[in-house]
Length: 241
Image (cartoon, rainbow, N blue to C red; front, side, top):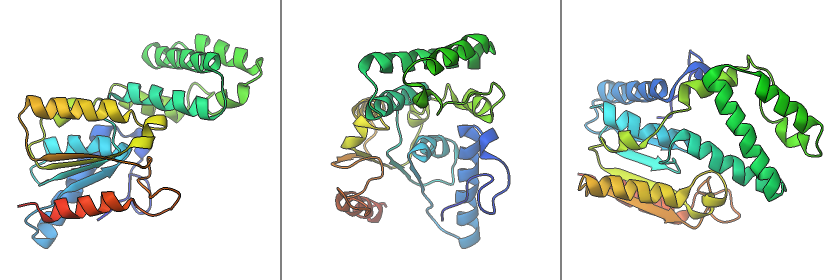
């Protein structure tokens, strides 16, 4: 079952006004619906990317979830994830190291606006970028102080999946793509954090896999899921008690 996100398809509500906790509640409701409607003994939750960061929230809070599958979901705090992704995207766009540093400075001003509501420093920085030779990249950021994006970031800026992972009792399967380290997710830091939190709890019923692929978990140069990932996942699911 793949439920629509709030405000998508036939789903009511608005995901732009929802926190990760809210979305986790939706996922828990979906698991509860499946379990009750079809009399299933075991219902798991699986999330990709941002959904992977929501998985531990659902698993740690819902007794209806029997297992958890996290696919390329970062284990670092949301702010750290954003900065990792922005720095990589900036380099891929051809910005120089000095310009990447300036992009991160822009994010510092964004954080200050989110926390204080003072728009003036950020607007002044936008104007400076407009006068520079690389303003096109800055145009991808919201330029209006009342944009919906700011409220959504305020809701989720301090999100941290690790405290939830520390409470997950169910069996866990985690998959990353090694090439994602240069793109969306700090793969190796995420792996280390999960290894550490699970070791600290002496958790045994988990697997963490890193495949030679990227964020979409595709075979190299093919729009097909990585064979190793699908094989391992199917084998793991079949092995659940």
